Length: 511
Ligand SMILES: [Zn+2]
Image (cartoon, rainbow, N blue to C red; front, side, top):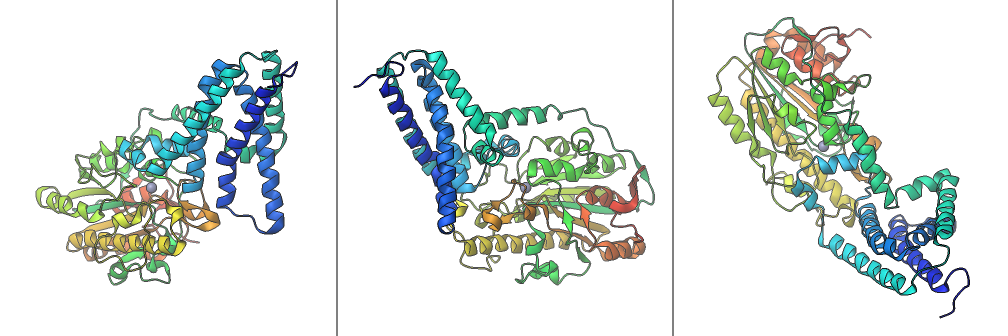
C-alpha cells in the first residue's frame, strides 16, 4: 500500500469510505423520501448531498485521527446517525427538545412501541459496518502530526457548518451531535420546572347549590375534522343530534404535544405567563377548596409534566394503565365509562368534578376505534405512518373522531338529568400530510387548531340563562386554550381575581 510522507493514503481512503457510506445511509434516504421535482430539483439535491458530504468528511477525519478515539466514536456515531435517519424517514421526526420531552414523559412502553424490528436491523447493520471501519483504522496505526490533522478537520467543519445558514439548519438535523444538543437544551428547559406551586386566587361570584363539571382532555383531535364545524364527512353523528352542544371551531393551542399542552390547559397559564403551567395549581385544587369532590380518570399515562395535577384529585382511576401507544391492541376511551358510572353511584356531595384524559386520536389510530365507529374505509395497515397511503390515514383518523363523538356523547348522557356542564378540549391538533407532515409535536400550523366543545344540561340552562346566552354568543369567536381555565371556573360561579372577562365563554363580551 502506498504511503504519503505526511498522511498515509490508507487513512485518506478510510475517511473517504466512511464519508460515502454515511452520506448514502444518513443523508440520501431523506431526499428519496422527498423526491426531486424536475431537473432543478435533482440539481438542488445533488448540491445539498455533496455539501453535506463535505461535513461528513471533516467529521470522519476528526474521529479517525486516533485509533482509540475511532474505536469508541465511530460505532457511537453510526448508531446515533442510524436512529436519526430512521425517524426522519419513517416519522418525519427531527430530534428536538420537544421530542426529548415527549420521549421522557411517556411511559417506557410507549417508547418501546416505536422501536420496530426494521429499526433494530438497521441499527445493527450500521453498528457492524462501523466495526469494519474500526478494524481498518486499527491496522493503519499511528498517523503523523495527529494534532495538525485534528485542527484542520475541526476548522473545515466549523467553516462549513456555520458558513451557510440554510446548510447549517439542514445539516444540524442530520448530524448525531444534534441529539446531544437537543438533550442539553431540554435539560436547560427543565430547570424552569418543578417549582413549588401556588394556588390561583379565586373569588366566589354565584355558586350553584349543586353542580357536576366534567372536563374531557382530548388527544390530537383537530377542529376542522368535526362535522359540527362543517367538515364534509359526518364524523359527529351523535353530537350533531344532541341539544345544548356548542362547538368552538376557532381555538388556538399554544403547544403541539401532550406534555406541554396539558399543564397549560389546566392552569391559568397564558401566552404572557406560560410559566404558570409549572408554578400554579390547576382548577382541580381551586374546586377542591370550594368543596368539590374531584376525580381524575385517565386513559393515558402519568406524564411527569402533569402528574402534579393528577394528585390534586381525591380519586384517581387508570383503567388502561398497562396499555402503550404505537402497539396493536384495542384501547378505547369507552373503557372510562364503567369507572365513571361507578363514581357517580358511590360519590356523595353536591359538587363534583371529573377530569377525563382520553387517548382520542393518538396514533395508531385503528387501536382507538371500537366496533361501529369504523365508518370510513380502507384504513391504515402499517404502523409506520408514512408506509400507508394518505387516504387510508385520513380514513382511520376520521374514524377516531367518530369514536370521540360516541365517547363524549356517552359521557353527556350520564349527566343529562343533572345540573351539569361538560367541557371537551383536545390538547392539540394533528398533521395529516400537510407539507409532508404527519402526527404532531413538530409545531405545524394544523396541530395548533384543536377541537373543542361545551355541553350544558337543561337544568343548567334554566338556572343560568345569562351564562348560556353568553356561551351561544361567544362560541364562534377566536380564543386561545387559555379560555378553558377561566370558563370552567366561571361555569362553577367562580372567577380568578384580577382576570378580565375576555377568556370567559360564559360572560357577554361587547365587540
Ligand atoms: Zn397529545
